[in-house]
Image (tube, rainbow, N blue to C red; front, side, top):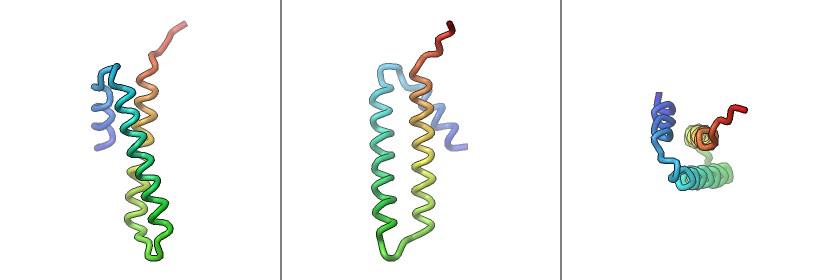
Length: 77
């Protein structure tokens, strides 16, 4: 599965690079959101492209959430 291999790539990110990686993923997520909003306003909407972009956006959201969880260490009290 492609999403799992990307999450494995995220695990290889050095701790000091987490913020940079997160900023990059969040910027890509915002760009997809803007493109989706533009596409919805177009008179001839491509439902296939809209569906594809929404799926990409969800994958990015999952990767961002995964990195944010992975970045915070588990603290056993």
